[in-house]
Amino acid sequence: MQLYELDPLSDLRWDEFIATHPAATAFHRTGWVAALAKTYGYRPVAISSARPGETLSDGAIFCEVMSRITGNRLVSLPFSDHAELLLTETVRGSEIARWLQVECVRRRWKYVEIRSASTEESFRNQLTQSDSFWLHSLDLTVPAEQLFSNLHKSCLQRRIQHAERQRLFYEKGSTDALLSEFYKLLVLTRRRFRLLPQPRIWFQNLLECMGGNAEILVARKDDRAIAAILVLRHRRAVIYKYGCSDEALHHLGGMPFLFWKLIEESKSAGAEFLDFGRSELDNAGLIAFKDRFGARRTRLNYFRYPKDSCKNEAFVRNLERGRKVFAVLPGAISSTLGRLAYRHIG
Image 1 (cartoon, one colour):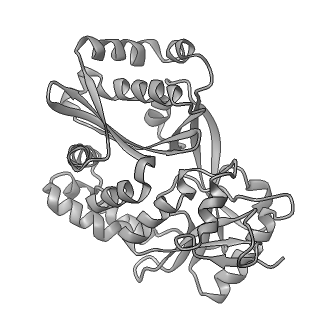
Image 2: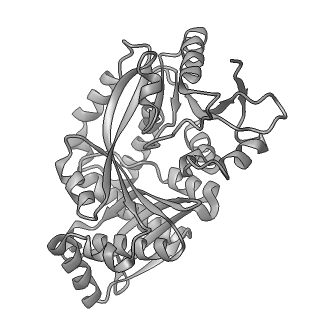
């Protein structure tokens, strides 16, 4: 089968296609891909069986990552928890896999990678599983009172009630002021975990490129920001993508409060599920946190070609060695280092 490349940022057919495809998510939107290109210099590319000018009925979207440090590669998609192949009965995952194999050799990519929750069977004989995670999703179609009763009583219900007694309130939007508060909390959180923060420009580009489909929620005690999350929206789905908080004020319950407000608001707006994102299989704490909301777990597998392609171990090892330093770096320096490092990680 002949597959054709298209530029999703300039070809209007892509947005028209993902607006109606049932498996499309916020990660397929041109706004998300445009923010990746604008921040990190990645080249977006989509493939489809539709000839130029024909209406798209299938497609897969990627970014070409060019790096002298970690190698050139094609990824679907960098910094995205998952990016399903949007297929039909006539265009299967095996067709995409064959195209990836041929192009990987022809263009001398270090590897190609697919991040999908539903294409394992199609890829089993052609691509190799390279990573596995839990993907957490909360069904919002049940009554609101049931959603609250499903929350862990002591870890969530009581903390939400405590936050309300403390008169916490929240503000949402995409203003520069909210972004500044979010980013300040993000730097604190990443420092706490000895990790480099993503560059501020990434979040700025994301809010600009996604328009109303990306939003920050900030929880406050009086006038002080104590917790914040960034969410993405597409049709009837909401994705929790980033979260951060002030550890000194965790006793106020800012994060449980924010998540509950997000759940209430999303349900009222007609959303059908909340995507809590992925968790590494050995991250018991994060898995337990998401389980306590009543989220359902499914396995999320990543696939690569060629079989013996390695991850960016040397680069990642160097980052690991620097974690003690990252914990004490001033925010401006760690943000600059993050901007230099993240473009090679995607």
